Amino acid sequence: MARKAKRDLTVEEQLARGPVDLPLLMLTLLLLGVGLIMVLSASYATAYYDPKTDSPLAYAIAQTRYALIGLAVMYGVSKFNYQYLRILSLPALIGSIVLLALVPTPLGVTLNGAQRWLKLLLVAGPTFQPSEIAKIAVILYFAARLSKRDAINKKKVKWNKRTRWGRFCAWLEKIGFMELVPYGVVLVIIAGLLLLEPHLSGTILVMAGGAAVLFAAGISLRWFALGIGVVAGGLWFVITMTPYMTSRVQLWLDPWSDSLGKGYQTIQSLYAIGSGGLLGRGLGKSSQKFLFLPEAENDFIFSVAVEELGMIGGIMILILFMLFILRGYWLALHARDRFGALVGVGITTLFAVQVFLNIGVVTNLIPNTGISLPFFSYGGTALIIQLAEVGIMLSISRQIPAPKQD
Figure 1 (cartoon, rainbow, N blue to C red):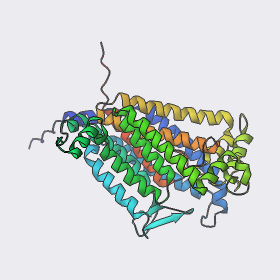
Figure 2 (cartoon, one colour):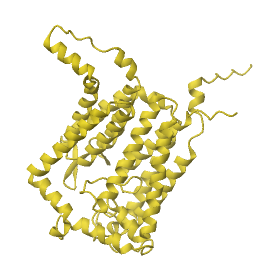
Figure 3 (cartoon, rainbow, N blue to C red):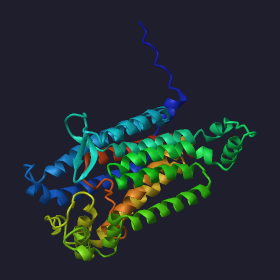
Figure 4 (cartoon, rainbow, N blue to C red):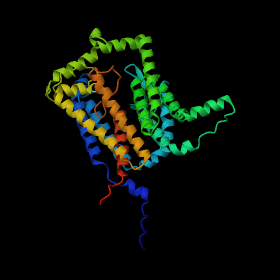
């Protein structure tokens, strides 16, 4: 019997099988490799003195396990045609909202005074943060909807201008406000659920990712100016009218005013960075990680990196992040279609904001927001999601049209 002829690949399948972007892949692997080394160094003392662990390498082994899972996820996602994410964007958004709504219930898990986690199986097993899923879900939903912006705008509701309400709605439609309503509703719902945890850093990242996609889609700049003004006014009100935030800002301006209390972590971080000097104490030779600096393997891992590798090592890490972010925006600019471009801008902005805020916190440039450093900070959910996001970027890179040759 003759062999059955193989089915010809469709254009979509052929495009999805293109080569991945090697610069982004190599930068990701470099950052991940350096991050794993720093987790090993920064977590050694914490794991050694932790009665729940049986080895000083426990945190490093767990993070390596998460990294391997994340790399497998990244590879699988990179082979997945990102066009199908349009269909999955709405279910992902709804699912993330449901998971966030479960966090304040008895199914939620409280760690370090905050209830931000759920059990992986809802009843037992390892924990994960639904906020990590919400970040990418918002980007995918916004990108999927805004990539069809022209078609949606053609189907505008025709308001009855004979009534006062109709004329008012028609005016809102004219200035572009009605177009923003679906996105505003999504952001308000998710931000509200995150603030209930409370999870200010997660709220900031969700807002940043959503705003980046809206900006790249061409939403009028006046709305961004209005949004910045509203946010600034809200922050001013919260800072001046709530004793908790007022004391937090005062502590940021002068952490030595409570050097053994709430300012302790910031002071120890600055000591670590300052004692590193130009060339550092040497890999593994940090003194601050020996229970002086809280969260040394997590939010403040960059402080340990600078202490051990020096200012030059810290600058090299920042250069790697800078190249990674620039490459992400380059891929977004050269994406095959508008959906890929918007997703690329959103994901890359997430990484950029996280890096800026984390470095700003450990150097006391901004108040402590509790944002981790991508690829470096200890944590399974965040690392796997970050590598999955890189997988989406690599999937987008597969379909970038090849340059025309003369």
